[in-house]
Image (cartoon, rainbow, N blue to C red; front, top):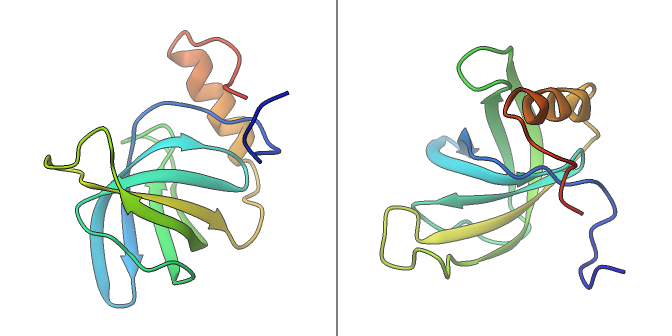
Length: 119
């Protein structure tokens, strides 16, 4: 049994995301996504419990633009890139299930020749 608390299949690939925090728009990269949330890396941290909106396309650059409401549940340094372009990592929980998201994630994984989603 996995040691983490995740209950949904996770999909690991890099997706450009625009993170909207109030009136600010921040570039971010989603690198681990499920139907209920995502892990992002970004240039600045966002406080825990702050409501945000994610804007992204699946597949990137081709699909319909999605606008997804979310709450920051975890924020901290990006251990893999602490002094680089993406020094912060955020754990994001979607405020509602996103219709069709898991199907789109599976399709993208298939297009990339991936195997089963991470668990």
